[in-house]
Every structure is written in structure tokens, then in C-alpha cells.
Image (cartoon, rainbow, N blue to C red; front, side):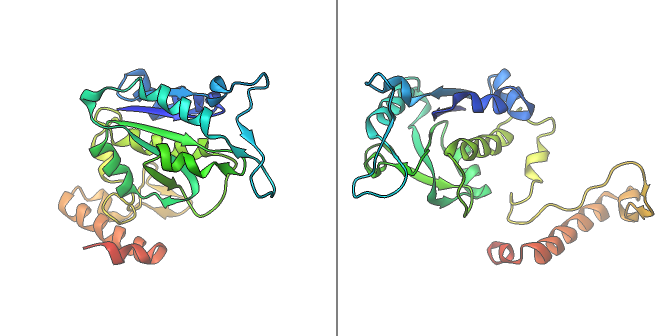
Length: 232
């Protein structure tokens, strides 16, 4: 899978390229990541990518032209043979992304460009001209779209074949089928007087599977009851 990111801070993505699951995915070319700084397309000596908002008000607004040029440069790296390119802007006003959205993106799209906004926001005309969807990782505001893009790319990488050590790991993650994950335990068998549940020591895989499913339902009911409304 190929991901492009329009960002003013490309080095932030070293957290993805140099570490963990995403680092291995990129090293093994299961995931390809390309970064493009819109400052490279600014035309003035100061490499300006933002300006004061029309109508007044605080903050600065990212300009259309450098962002469009960065997006189009990334588009040139894509392949028509791999299907259409989806452009997703990361913004607090976007759709709150879910695990199902990530699954659908990985399933249906092999090429995606993320636009990481900064400052007060992005000139609205960019959304009309270049952006297919607007996504948000939660109902709060962070300083820029880079962290949101990294969160989504990490979630995507986990679903790509060959990335995780055990393919079933992603299938058992919280939210994959609408439920939270079950409790997990490892050695030692007793910690501060708290033992591992007997069923996990029984060797009876059918009982263990049933217990885990019951725990998933109970945990979801306790911690995120609203999720059960969407579970068949």
C-alpha cells in the first residue's frame, strides 16, 4: 500500500519510519510512505504557506496553491494500475474515524494521500478542489494533522498482510467486530496475589474461546455500552 502525506514537518514521521510495526512494514516495502512539504512550492523568498484570514480573526490560514502543488506532486508518484487515489484531510471538523473506516480504506484503496493541516485551518477551497474526505481522530483539537495522520497510518499498517507477526492479532483487536478486546495474561501465574483465571490454564480451547467472548461482551457493556448498539 502507498501513502503520501502533505506536511510542513516531514521529520515528525520518523516515528513511523524508524520504529515498531510501521518501521518494519516500510522496511519490507509492504507499506510505502512518501512525504511532501508544501513549503517547497511557496513562491516568495520566505517560503510562505499561510496568510491572514479574510474577514479578520485570530490565527493564520494555510494557502491553497502550495497545498495543491504538494498534492499534485504526490499524485504523480501513484499508479493508475493500482486504482484511484483518495485524498483525506485531517481536520477537527472531519468524520470521526473508526476501525471500520480503517478496514474499508485498506480493503478498497491502495493509494491514499493525507493532508495535515496547521495553524487556524486550511482555505476552504482546497476541500472543494482536491479533497475527497475529511477525517478526525477525535472530538478535540491538536496542533496539526501530522499526529492524526500517523495514528491512521499505524492503524492501516496493522491490517496489511505480512506486517504483524501473527495474522490473527489484528483480527482480535478491539473494535474489529464492534467489541472491545478480552483481558490478557502472561507469566508469572500469580502477581501480588492475583492469579490467572483457571480457564486459561485448562487447555480446553473451546472453553477458553467461550470465556474470551463472554469477557469481550462484559467489558464492552461495562466500558463502552454504546458499541453494543451496533453489534449484531
